[in-house]
Length: 138
Image (tube, rainbow, N blue to C red; front, side, top):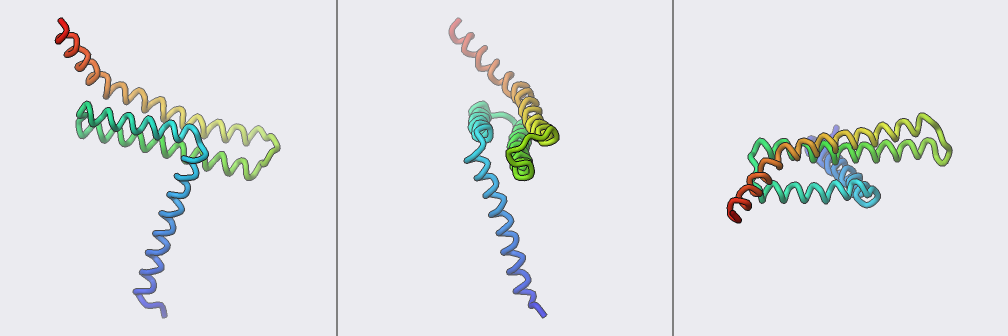
């Protein structure tokens, strides 16, 4: 019979291993997918803007959800592309192209909606700064 301590140690190792594998996937995607790197840079810019403009807690929640959605979609897109390439290889298949296009479409859709949400959140802050600048000049 397996002791409870040994079982807990195996569970901890399995959990650690699954996190390690997940971060390997993020690292692979960052190294190999230009768009993921672009989204990461945009994330840093948006987070910086959020701190500078002192957005509300609710707005932070929405921004973090948008960032998570876009980056997660990029990871799923990469997983689908890699799987399709493994199965199809160098040959062309219409269904493979459709799968890759749909996955890319999910990224574009989530990124586009996130841009709109970002504009809704940030434009009033930028407008206020602009108006204060104009008032200080006049």
